[in-house]
Length: 246
Ligand SMILES: C[S@@+](CC[C@H](N)C(=O)[O-])C[C@H]1O[C@@H](n2cnc3c(N)ncnc32)[C@H](O)[C@@H]1O
Image (cartoon, rainbow, N blue to C red):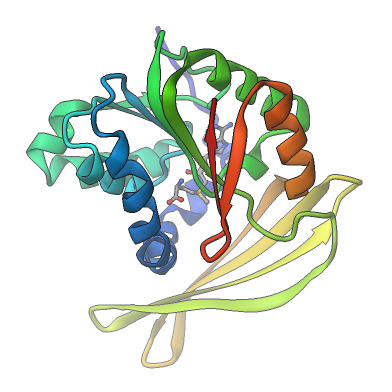
Protein backbone atom coordinates (compact mmCIF):
# COMPACT_ATOMS: atom_id res chain seq x y z
CA UNK A 1 0.00 0.00 0.00
CA UNK A 2 1.22 3.49 -0.75
CA UNK A 3 0.73 5.64 2.33
CA UNK A 4 0.74 9.34 1.52
CA UNK A 5 1.16 11.41 4.66
CA UNK A 6 0.21 15.02 5.08
CA UNK A 7 3.05 16.62 7.02
CA UNK A 8 1.35 20.02 6.79
CA UNK A 9 -1.40 18.90 9.19
CA UNK A 10 0.83 16.98 11.59
CA UNK A 11 1.80 19.29 14.47
CA UNK A 12 4.45 16.76 15.50
CA UNK A 13 6.25 17.47 12.22
CA UNK A 14 7.40 20.67 13.97
CA UNK A 15 7.59 19.56 17.59
CA UNK A 16 9.16 16.11 17.13
CA UNK A 17 12.73 17.19 18.00
CA UNK A 18 11.46 18.42 21.39
CA UNK A 19 9.08 15.60 22.35
CA UNK A 20 11.60 13.00 23.47
CA UNK A 21 13.68 15.34 25.67
CA UNK A 22 10.51 16.90 27.15
CA UNK A 23 8.76 13.61 27.90
CA UNK A 24 11.77 11.80 29.40
CA UNK A 25 10.93 12.95 32.96
CA UNK A 26 7.35 11.71 32.65
CA UNK A 27 8.58 8.24 31.71
CA UNK A 28 11.08 8.19 34.56
CA UNK A 29 8.18 8.75 36.95
CA UNK A 30 5.68 6.34 35.41
CA UNK A 31 8.10 3.63 34.26
CA UNK A 32 8.40 1.64 37.53
CA UNK A 33 4.60 1.41 37.95
CA UNK A 34 4.25 0.28 34.36
CA UNK A 35 6.90 -2.40 34.83
CA UNK A 36 5.16 -3.65 37.99
CA UNK A 37 1.85 -3.97 36.08
CA UNK A 38 3.40 -5.63 33.04
CA UNK A 39 5.78 -8.18 34.48
CA UNK A 40 3.01 -10.49 35.81
CA UNK A 41 1.69 -10.67 32.21
CA UNK A 42 4.91 -12.08 30.76
CA UNK A 43 3.35 -15.55 30.39
CA UNK A 44 0.85 -14.32 27.77
CA UNK A 45 1.68 -15.08 24.19
CA UNK A 46 -0.13 -12.40 22.16
CA UNK A 47 1.54 -9.25 20.83
CA UNK A 48 1.73 -5.91 22.62
CA UNK A 49 0.29 -2.85 20.87
CA UNK A 50 1.72 0.59 21.67
CA UNK A 51 -0.76 3.12 20.27
CA UNK A 52 0.74 6.52 19.45
CA UNK A 53 4.16 5.18 20.40
CA UNK A 54 5.90 8.50 19.81
CA UNK A 55 9.66 8.25 20.24
CA UNK A 56 9.28 4.82 21.85
CA UNK A 57 10.07 5.37 25.52
CA UNK A 58 6.97 3.37 26.49
CA UNK A 59 7.75 0.78 23.83
CA UNK A 60 11.13 0.21 25.38
CA UNK A 61 9.67 -0.21 28.89
CA UNK A 62 7.08 -2.70 27.63
CA UNK A 63 9.79 -4.61 25.81
CA UNK A 64 11.97 -4.86 28.92
CA UNK A 65 9.00 -6.06 31.01
CA UNK A 66 7.76 -8.62 28.47
CA UNK A 67 10.98 -9.96 26.93
CA UNK A 68 9.32 -12.49 24.63
CA UNK A 69 6.43 -10.41 23.28
CA UNK A 70 6.23 -9.24 19.69
CA UNK A 71 5.37 -5.53 19.63
CA UNK A 72 3.45 -3.33 17.22
CA UNK A 73 4.30 0.36 17.68
CA UNK A 74 1.55 2.31 15.93
CA UNK A 75 2.46 5.90 15.11
CA UNK A 76 0.91 8.22 12.51
CA UNK A 77 3.55 10.95 12.54
CA UNK A 78 6.51 10.41 10.21
CA UNK A 79 8.61 12.75 12.33
CA UNK A 80 7.88 10.76 15.48
CA UNK A 81 8.50 7.47 13.70
CA UNK A 82 11.96 8.76 12.82
CA UNK A 83 12.78 9.10 16.52
CA UNK A 84 11.11 5.75 17.25
CA UNK A 85 13.05 3.89 14.57
CA UNK A 86 16.32 5.49 15.70
CA UNK A 87 15.63 4.22 19.24
CA UNK A 88 14.85 0.72 17.96
CA UNK A 89 17.89 0.57 15.68
CA UNK A 90 20.15 1.13 18.69
CA UNK A 91 18.83 -2.10 20.22
CA UNK A 92 19.01 -5.02 17.79
CA UNK A 93 16.85 -7.47 19.83
CA UNK A 94 14.20 -4.77 20.28
CA UNK A 95 14.26 -3.92 16.58
CA UNK A 96 13.88 -7.62 15.75
CA UNK A 97 10.54 -7.91 17.55
CA UNK A 98 9.04 -4.43 17.08
CA UNK A 99 7.01 -3.59 14.00
CA UNK A 100 6.52 0.12 13.41
CA UNK A 101 3.12 0.71 11.85
CA UNK A 102 2.56 4.01 10.05
CA UNK A 103 -0.98 5.11 10.86
CA UNK A 104 -3.46 5.98 13.57
CA UNK A 105 -4.98 3.78 16.27
CA UNK A 106 -8.29 3.54 14.41
CA UNK A 107 -6.73 2.25 11.20
CA UNK A 108 -4.61 -0.39 12.91
CA UNK A 109 -5.81 -3.93 12.09
CA UNK A 110 -5.70 -5.52 15.54
CA UNK A 111 -4.32 -9.08 15.58
CA UNK A 112 -6.79 -11.76 16.67
CA UNK A 113 -5.61 -11.76 20.30
CA UNK A 114 -3.41 -9.13 21.95
CA UNK A 115 -1.88 -9.38 25.42
CA UNK A 116 -1.28 -5.71 26.26
CA UNK A 117 -2.32 -2.37 24.81
CA UNK A 118 -0.50 0.80 25.78
CA UNK A 119 -2.22 4.13 25.07
CA UNK A 120 -0.11 6.74 26.81
CA UNK A 121 -0.45 10.51 26.41
CA UNK A 122 -2.51 10.05 23.28
CA UNK A 123 -6.26 9.55 23.84
CA UNK A 124 -6.86 13.30 23.58
CA UNK A 125 -6.02 12.98 19.91
CA UNK A 126 -9.16 10.88 19.40
CA UNK A 127 -12.63 12.34 18.88
CA UNK A 128 -15.22 10.82 21.24
CA UNK A 129 -16.74 8.44 18.66
CA UNK A 130 -13.30 7.27 17.61
CA UNK A 131 -12.25 6.81 21.21
CA UNK A 132 -15.33 4.70 21.95
CA UNK A 133 -14.83 2.55 18.88
CA UNK A 134 -11.19 2.05 19.89
CA UNK A 135 -12.29 0.64 23.28
CA UNK A 136 -14.68 -1.71 21.47
CA UNK A 137 -11.97 -2.96 19.16
CA UNK A 138 -9.53 -3.41 22.01
CA UNK A 139 -12.12 -5.30 24.07
CA UNK A 140 -12.83 -7.59 21.12
CA UNK A 141 -9.15 -8.51 20.75
CA UNK A 142 -7.78 -8.43 24.30
CA UNK A 143 -6.65 -11.69 25.92
CA UNK A 144 -8.96 -12.46 28.89
CA UNK A 145 -5.85 -12.24 31.10
CA UNK A 146 -4.45 -9.18 29.28
CA UNK A 147 -4.42 -5.50 30.19
CA UNK A 148 -4.71 -2.02 28.71
CA UNK A 149 -2.60 0.75 30.23
CA UNK A 150 -3.94 4.21 29.50
CA UNK A 151 -3.67 7.68 31.00
CA UNK A 152 -6.00 10.66 30.79
CA UNK A 153 -4.01 13.85 30.89
CA UNK A 154 -5.53 16.84 32.71
CA UNK A 155 -7.53 18.92 32.25
CA UNK A 156 -10.42 16.49 31.85
CA UNK A 157 -12.94 19.24 31.07
CA UNK A 158 -12.72 22.01 28.49
CA UNK A 159 -11.17 24.75 30.62
CA UNK A 160 -8.54 27.41 30.16
CA UNK A 161 -5.09 26.26 31.22
CA UNK A 162 -2.76 29.14 32.07
CA UNK A 163 0.69 29.18 30.57
CA UNK A 164 3.12 26.98 32.46
CA UNK A 165 6.73 26.02 31.92
CA UNK A 166 7.79 22.47 31.12
CA UNK A 167 11.16 20.95 31.95
CA UNK A 168 14.46 22.42 30.85
CA UNK A 169 16.68 19.77 29.31
CA UNK A 170 20.35 20.29 28.58
CA UNK A 171 21.90 18.45 25.64
CA UNK A 172 25.51 19.45 25.06
CA UNK A 173 25.80 23.21 25.45
CA UNK A 174 22.19 23.84 24.39
CA UNK A 175 19.04 23.81 26.47
CA UNK A 176 15.59 22.78 25.30
CA UNK A 177 12.48 24.01 27.05
CA UNK A 178 8.77 24.32 26.48
CA UNK A 179 5.63 26.06 27.66
CA UNK A 180 2.06 24.94 27.38
CA UNK A 181 -1.27 26.68 27.65
CA UNK A 182 -4.73 25.73 26.46
CA UNK A 183 -8.07 27.28 25.69
CA UNK A 184 -11.46 25.61 25.23
CA UNK A 185 -12.59 24.99 21.66
CA UNK A 186 -16.08 23.69 22.34
CA UNK A 187 -17.67 21.43 24.91
CA UNK A 188 -15.21 18.61 24.87
CA UNK A 189 -12.26 20.17 23.10
CA UNK A 190 -9.19 22.20 23.81
CA UNK A 191 -6.45 23.69 21.73
CA UNK A 192 -3.06 23.31 23.35
CA UNK A 193 -0.66 26.11 22.39
CA UNK A 194 2.89 24.92 22.82
CA UNK A 195 6.08 26.92 22.58
CA UNK A 196 9.40 25.15 22.30
CA UNK A 197 12.72 26.93 22.51
CA UNK A 198 16.36 26.07 21.94
CA UNK A 199 18.79 28.16 24.00
CA UNK A 200 22.51 28.65 24.31
CA UNK A 201 23.70 30.33 27.50
CA UNK A 202 20.28 31.86 28.03
CA UNK A 203 20.01 33.19 24.46
CA UNK A 204 17.09 31.88 22.40
CA UNK A 205 18.43 30.36 19.19
CA UNK A 206 15.14 29.04 17.87
CA UNK A 207 11.47 29.09 18.80
CA UNK A 208 8.73 26.78 17.51
CA UNK A 209 5.01 27.38 18.12
CA UNK A 210 2.65 24.45 17.69
CA UNK A 211 -1.08 23.90 18.32
CA UNK A 212 -2.55 20.52 19.16
CA UNK A 213 -6.29 19.84 18.98
CA UNK A 214 -7.18 17.80 22.04
CA UNK A 215 -10.40 16.09 23.13
CA UNK A 216 -11.11 16.06 26.85
CA UNK A 217 -13.04 13.44 28.79
CA UNK A 218 -13.57 12.94 32.52
CA UNK A 219 -12.40 9.77 34.25
CA UNK A 220 -16.06 9.04 35.11
CA UNK A 221 -17.02 9.16 31.42
CA UNK A 222 -14.08 6.93 30.59
CA UNK A 223 -15.12 4.38 33.22
CA UNK A 224 -18.62 4.31 31.67
CA UNK A 225 -17.15 3.86 28.17
CA UNK A 226 -14.94 1.02 29.36
CA UNK A 227 -17.76 -0.65 31.29
CA UNK A 228 -19.96 -0.46 28.17
CA UNK A 229 -17.56 -2.78 26.38
CA UNK A 230 -16.87 -5.08 29.32
CA UNK A 231 -13.59 -3.58 30.50
CA UNK A 232 -13.05 -3.13 34.23
CA UNK A 233 -10.65 -0.44 35.41
CA UNK A 234 -8.44 0.23 38.37
CA UNK A 235 -6.45 3.42 38.77
CA UNK A 236 -2.91 3.87 40.04
CA UNK A 237 -3.55 7.28 41.57
CA UNK A 238 0.08 8.17 42.23
CA UNK A 239 0.87 8.09 38.50
CA UNK A 240 -2.62 8.71 37.09
CA UNK A 241 -2.54 5.44 35.17
CA UNK A 242 -5.63 3.33 34.41
CA UNK A 243 -5.25 -0.41 34.12
CA UNK A 244 -8.11 -2.03 32.21
CA UNK A 245 -8.89 -5.72 32.02
CA UNK A 246 -11.75 -7.84 30.66
C1 LIG B 1 2.25 13.31 23.30
S1 LIG B 1 2.77 12.09 22.14
C2 LIG B 1 3.02 10.69 23.22
C3 LIG B 1 3.92 9.64 22.65
C4 LIG B 1 4.15 8.41 23.52
N1 LIG B 1 2.94 7.64 23.70
C5 LIG B 1 4.71 8.82 24.84
O1 LIG B 1 3.95 8.92 25.82
O2 LIG B 1 5.93 9.04 24.93
C6 LIG B 1 1.25 11.65 21.32
C7 LIG B 1 1.47 10.73 20.14
O3 LIG B 1 0.19 10.29 19.64
C8 LIG B 1 0.29 10.25 18.24
N2 LIG B 1 -1.06 10.28 17.64
C9 LIG B 1 -1.75 11.35 17.16
N3 LIG B 1 -2.94 10.95 16.66
C10 LIG B 1 -3.00 9.60 16.81
C11 LIG B 1 -3.94 8.60 16.46
N4 LIG B 1 -5.11 8.91 15.86
N5 LIG B 1 -3.64 7.32 16.74
C12 LIG B 1 -2.47 6.99 17.32
N6 LIG B 1 -1.55 7.89 17.69
C13 LIG B 1 -1.79 9.19 17.44
C14 LIG B 1 1.14 11.44 17.88
O4 LIG B 1 1.66 11.37 16.57
C15 LIG B 1 2.19 11.40 18.99
O5 LIG B 1 3.31 10.64 18.63
